[in-house]
Image 1 (cartoon, one colour):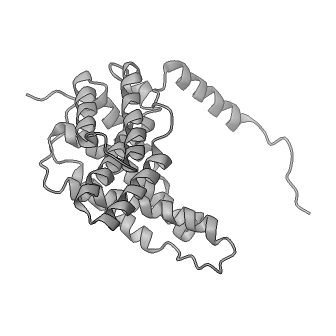
Image 2 (spheres, rainbow, N blue to C red):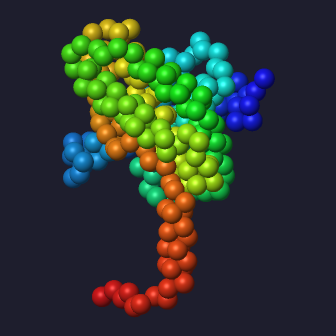
Image 3 (cartoon, helix red, strand yellow):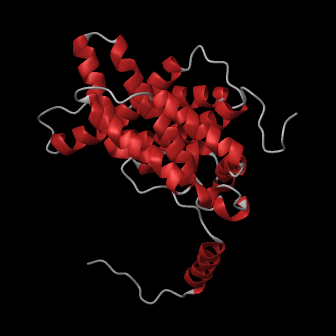
Length: 260
């Protein structure tokens, strides 16, 4: 028997596959930065970060290729889908400039994007789902590795323990409020899976490539998982948001901006 917050098994993986394909396409448009470029160092760092997002998505697909997802996996896969969709928009912005990007969340309007978040947060409000997701994240992260990979694992481990620290804000919460800040939880669960996928591939790679994969995992976790534990929005937060929106929209411009 299913509860009302369960999702059909296998529902989210096709969405992840589509998102990764779009990320591949977006990454193909990233500039190749010659040393002669005046900003080649800073631009090269940005391009590298976007390609690391792609490497993590590819690793996740390989790691989960043989899996038969159940309802808990679908929640987790939905979080990966969200994270990769964000990466598509970010990568397109770097490849084409802001004017060439699609609307928020890979062509979805804000309300459509947050329908995905609300559905996932509704599932995670169930203690059984939240705890199963955290347990599976612990399983996919595995044991602490030796050497340089340990630094990436430590960041991911701290991020995962943060999900326990803020569990009480999400479990049993009203998604009408918690989903207002829910993207931070969805993103954290997605990024943990993507980072764990990079780490899990290290052992199966030749030494030189394995070292590169370790460096990728270290940088990916540094980029995405050092933030504080994801906190849920509260009723007070939502009320203050409404007050701010009304205030800003009703305020007349105080001055005309002129250029010389």
